[in-house]
Length: 413
Image (cartoon, rainbow, N blue to C red; front, side):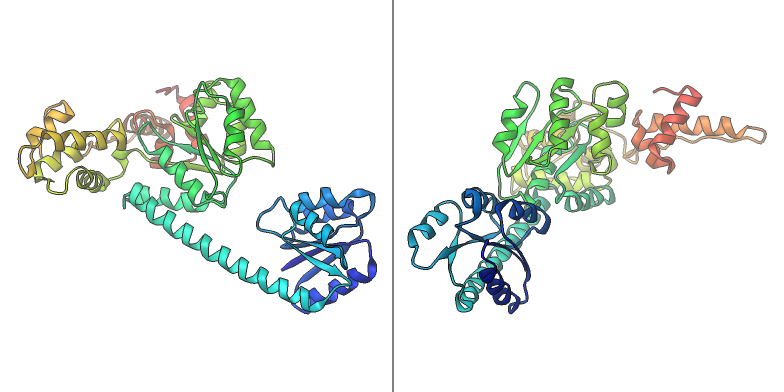
């Protein structure tokens, strides 16, 4: 427990130091509001005791400043019998008061109240986080390694003040942003969403102590992106989650995304994999969405084969809508392949062709290493549908190396 005492009277500062030291606190005492403001930022105290008779009329300003953090206890130090000053201090943000000369018994009583309040707040925060984790597992289901990794990243990145979320359209970026917010220290505050055409500054103020989601950050005007970059630099901001549909490095190269945004957030990126890379999650999600649509329907084996064979360019959103339509078209308790064919709008894939065939690069004696490397990168790019990040992951190379090799071999995809 850290305590900051701001009091021009050295005797009462010493009395407070003795009273708090008996409770095991880390105490720092200063005599003026200016010193108090400096130590407020350095010490980050749990408790502030501020005299109401600070020199140069600094008490009012300092009390308001100290009370700006709702987790902190702020107690006014008031001359004996000046109840009017105690009331005025509490009106300005103090939650309780101590008389001067200081009573060790009164300090002990206020410390007990503070400990009970802090314990109740910690229990409430634990309950909030537990509920948020349960809700995120329901709203963002999946067990594939790629998805499990993404969900672990949400937990890891939630405490950050700003995060960049990337992924193709339909990969649940907004839902992920909501749970970044819910699991963050700002989770009890508002969640505000803004996109192209809406005032960023206005949305920033509405988000206040919560989180602001900026969708399609790689599509909004660069002038607005400079405002976003300015907010990223500022310490006084809500949490910021920036969502990009395209590879941010590509967007920077095309001058569609401010390079400063990526450079500030490159170590705070949450990438959501496309559905085609999530393996058995397709069948899990299909059953999950069908349960939401109907408690009695199920897919037969051929229908499920057809669903898992589809490459889902619209990702989770496309699957959700397809399952809803299939549920409406079903004429019995089981959804068959004919219904699935109608909602997908294409012939059923043959059994056994559930996944795209991985291309093979053939190597002959006498082929140069450079030529083999070029063909391997080219085939991997084709398999990844031009996604350079995925190409780098498949080849176990850095994204920068992939860009350099693409340029070296003239493989722009």
